[in-house]
Image 1 (spheres, one colour):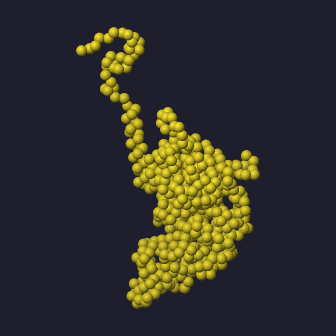
Image 2: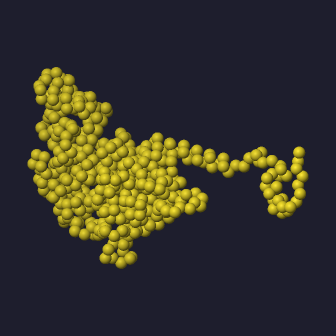
Image 3: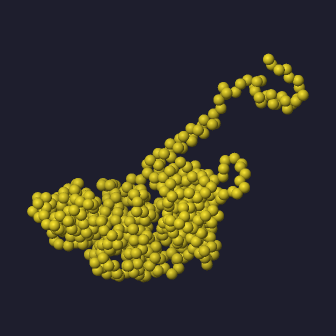
Length: 528
């Protein structure tokens, strides 16, 4: 019965094509049992059953969320079901066709257009005004800042339930704490030309803004800045049907079943920032950010953090003692405060930038590295990938041990991009100041402003906090631990003095030298 009966009774070319598409994505093995269980071994699945699979209960509370967001969550399941499976019942062919429409390999622009259509239909089902106009894969209409924030938050919830392990947290009525995604909304507004003065970014209120962004410009911004957003919708559908095939049940999951904890902790790497960075990566490195993107739902050991200036102490020496020996991808986050042009010296604004490297730090006198990314994280999110013109990705140099004369001393500190003496980002050895220069000095990373309203002149700011997170996996951390243990062993060996290596004081060269200094003309008899 179910899928097997349908496929045996109908071997039309259309069905064979849909099954071939599902096979190419590795989905057919779990689609058959999920269809069979949802249809109760009949030839079709009701729209009610499908809506139940994709539904989320509204949590008891969602602090700091848009006013309309609870209604969006409760309308997600029915809207998704009607979008992919528009008939009252879905046969095996219609079930495959709806799944492949969402989860098959297709251009990113088509996936994003389908996501916009889901958001528009969910708003319509929830009775929320929406200004999107969708015709096939063409995108038109407008996004209000609050609407874009709701869309991004909805994608975060779908990603959460796609990545979180089954039963994580166990519910318990925990509130769903959404991450702060204002930096992404501001990034879209700047890209759409709706922000005249970037210096106003710190005081911008998303919920009260009446500006509108063209949906086509938001579409382009998402494809260029956060292309990983296109995978949230397909992954959600895929994981819900896979879970149904394994468990045989179709419960209406609660949005707070993962017991997400408050992401507003004291770390610079908040879950919203980590998720934004993961959306920019097209490699498996993005999976390493899951623990920081969904704290409490995905297991994350805080061994990921290698250095934190407020805890480990400021300065290059303290930094080096914590990151040395780690050979894996690193995320360096820098929080600093600088004066905005036109404001008084007391009007300093705090901003956060980041650097993602593909290797660990080395004590060198030249730039090194094979790849990397620069990030403007707060208040406006931007990503700057390698330009391919130069390879000055990272620089780290400390004072040599001992007093050694250097005719041409190299800068002591950390740098990223640019050239020696004209680094795009430079942190001094005391970790008290950070200098950010205009992108004109840099041929390694793409052009753009790391700080709102950044001009051509260098910006010198007071460094507030530095964090270094390791995303090289378990092997990189174990390798660093082995390196530190080896260095500790060598240090202990050097401190120990073996008294057996020393002879009698009377026969020692030191005593002979002291005797000669005290009376150099003294006649000594040679011992034969």
